[in-house]
Length: 416
Ligand code: EPZ
Image (tube, rainbow, N blue to C red; front, side, top):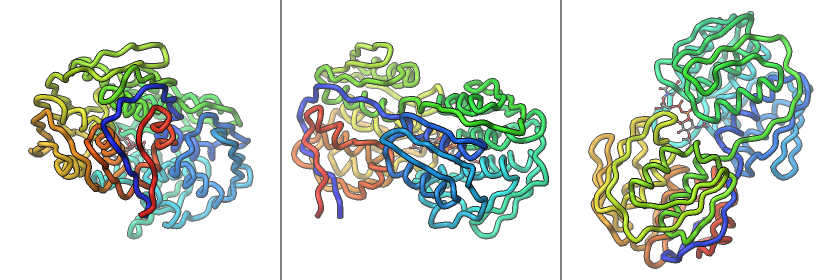
């Protein structure tokens, strides 16, 4: 079995360059189906989630060529056929094939997507949007057959500002007849990145990044090229690393305003940073101040950084973090207490007593961001930390081992 072995306690210096955003790329790749001509996407991260989506496109007959971080997708030869479970359940973002195939072919037959165990993660809001556009939905077990004679623009109110539902409805609505308005839409930067991509293809989308998105349907979407925005969650993860063990650690190719909520919390904790247009230079402070954090939809503190900031909270005299977005996103706390953390969970809130000297031991990554949090913990813990189930980590952080070794971390992948 592959594990990560980490020897902690070392100060890290040098530069980490941020890759393209996983949560943008996983929507851009299925969205390419909507075009009638070849699409070129730059800055696509080289992670297994992307490989899975590329396999799905090839399964459907689209031609996909990849050179490094550049994808060329030609949907011309694509055949719309049922997507088998072993393909669609590799990752949650497979659900974007629903919006793209329904939008282009007015029919999609696929299974409910996989993903982390951080919550039930239903797709009722996605389906509500498709039905509002005129689609019929047949659920057989966890297989969905969604079809429509035609899709007609309409007004859709999202009960929760769901990222996935906002994007999926936007995908389907680009090829509907007439105007669709999505109210209470999610405002994450990835949604803006997708909307710009679709508009480059000839879609007519306004308001992405606000709570109200308007889409005027079009009959044809042309080829174009587009670039994935930097990954704000990867950036936030490495900025937290700098706050833990950095000595003028430089995190480059990021968009500071995309992680504003994190930066303000780190300042509150006593961390000083030099913030440039596209980079941050950060060092570990002598000590941390107590902070409390509440995860919110964008631009609030992102749920995806709730787990990665855990190691820093163990170094505060006291701290708390409230998880408002997912119902089961504290699975890493057990491992952190095993490392020497003093963390109690009270419903949606994790309460920390500290500062704690963490001591390395063997722990299991339960999901993507929990795994990243454990890597950061291993880098501050005394002695050796062994992390198992590391495929959870490698699917969402491009070159994480190489990037850490480059700044002096004692980390390696071992076979045990
Ligand atoms: C996206 O997931 C991200 N994943 C998640 O990142 C991120 O945590 C989440 O947005 C919130 O920012 C991708 O982009 C691939 P949601 P998504 O729909 O779209 C409930 C990571 O670590 N909900 O905004 O699934 C849902 O159960 C991953 O990179 C419904 O109830 O998130 C959750 O409690 C983890 N019905 C909340 O809304 C629905 O139809 C937020 O979900 C849809 C969602």
